[in-house]
Image 1 (cartoon, rainbow, N blue to C red):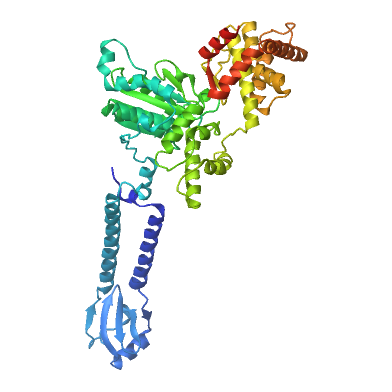
Image 2 (spheres, one colour):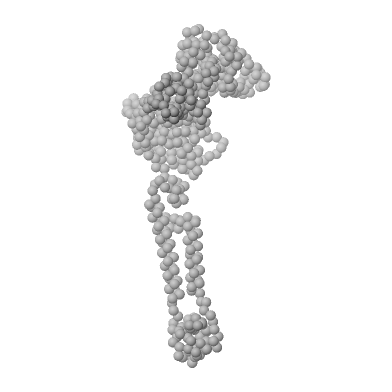
Length: 553
């Protein structure tokens, strides 16, 4: 039910009430009887001297109108018939009530006009101006979700060869779903892109939609986090409903960890309600619906386990920082429209640790510098001049000097040797990252935990064998090694005795460090081989590491 007064806000109601009060006071002033009362002697004198122009009676009083005195009154009971015999006494004028009705009409008309004007104004509001809507609508804004047609292709993105291979199956499924249904297979309902900021996760999702030629529904995880309880869950429901109407389609949720964090002790009904709705929606659509959910996150460790289980995000794709060859491919894309006279491979080698976004910024800064210097081609000197600006600007990209790079190559070579020697699970190890899986299977055996500790100490030991010192970037590996040793002593009873002891932690750490140091020293040739591979390609896979180790042994 639409009550007219609810269309006015508090300030408007106050102004309207104030206006009514002012009008009522004016009516009171006009209608109240303020006529002066005279005595019988004064009235007789006015009548006898013929000063009375008009007389009328009202409510027991006789009103006498004169030029000099104005209107005066006297009680009718005081006047004798002989005194008023020659006066023409009339009935009281109704002009006061006329004023009353006039003001009543004005007030009513003004109120009706204001109400209709407000309703008409709201009806004419454009959809992009919700700020002046009524308060109820402001608290529940429209969440119309429209699909977009992606124009980004894989050919527009450089350095994503491994990722492209993982996603080609998804693209083929969206193009030819019957092929998979007839075979009894189903595609993953969800694909999670994991990687640091700036590596192109959003562009990859757009490229999948463009290659498959399907609608692309984009939402950020932060857009689901609402002030009002229930609005986040509503947005999730609307997103999936829109996608189902346009199936086959891709739903892309950027920064999904904003809404998909682990549910712990801190209570947040709105975020948990939104997460529950997302879990329900991903369970709710059928395998034949033709919808694939792609999400991106920078930190998979904080995500709720229910979101990562099979049947939701079945496939995880790690998008790492680009290697030298991948950086070269990315730079070629960015330099297509820019006149240049340089070796792209030289630029790629000097940008260790750069992500795709940083490379784009580097190329743009070099081009701007070239224009400022009124030159016609971008040269290597321009890149060298702006490198520090990109390194220490807003993005603060980690860059390695030549000496730091030598230390990093040696450090990672030691870790490659240890991880391969103890056959720990990893896909590849690069100069900027390593994806060695920590021990998680239960029960964990002592020799398995010690193997992981040796790997985390191998980089330090390898650096000391070559340079006699190690760099500060060993802090993470050292912290992980300490955590594992602490768990062995205080949680698993794997120290020198069942009772935990601080001395046990130091003795175990020193023993494992000496063991990996001796192992690296005996197999220096293998470590040197790994150094050469890392120096040239900036990464090494486990299969290549095994093959290299078998050649030397």
